Image (cartoon, rainbow, N blue to C red; front, top):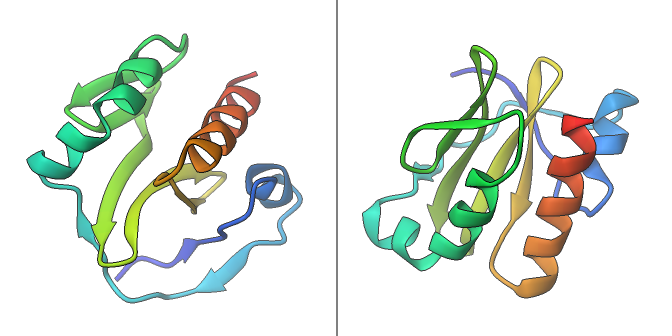
Length: 111
């Protein structure tokens, strides 16, 4: 299993750039299925409109040739994994506030 960087806070991408988010190996979480992707379609639509990323498979966005954002589902909710350096930052996307944090983080990372 690949080691990933993981956090759940709003400024997690900025902290990741500072190298402060290494958590280590974590248990696997199921990639989001079609029903979950249907439920977050407004998030996907908004991501599709951002410059610099491309959706190659539904719910999986790339920046240049590297995976940049994908989604997971879990009994705790839906989460976005966002590329941060060589690792990933995991952000919940279940509420309007969490989605706002996702978009703020992603747009900042794309600059």
